[in-house]
Length: 143
Image 1 (cartoon, rainbow, N blue to C red):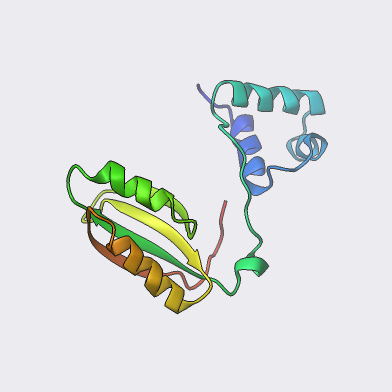
Image 2 (cartoon, one colour):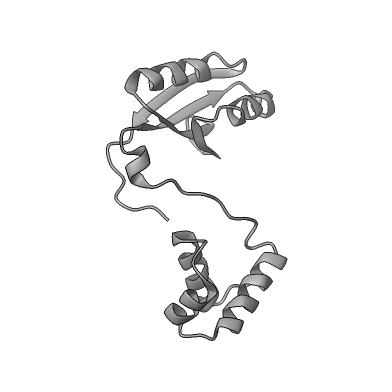
């Protein structure tokens, strides 16, 4: 599906706040509420919008330590490693990447010692060859 500039703006507003009212989004886009509602329904129907999620406020996770954890996986064990990582609630997302590592996980835990435990747990998964972690110092923006 080819997205219009208005569709892109609509998606950007929904990324910022998926619970924003249709009326508020319509005002920000300069469109009618029914037009915005129709566009949202079309984007959902065509699979562009596949769901909605919760973003936790920075104040809640302010004390949490976040890290990008790069994971190298033995060949042919990707499926089982991904399944094991999916079961870890401390991981916020998992991406397949190019380069010397195969995956990058975004983790969030209350303390540095917990991050140490998390990376050890990831390293102990059958099929994980090695991990490399980078602690997030601050987030400049997020969409």
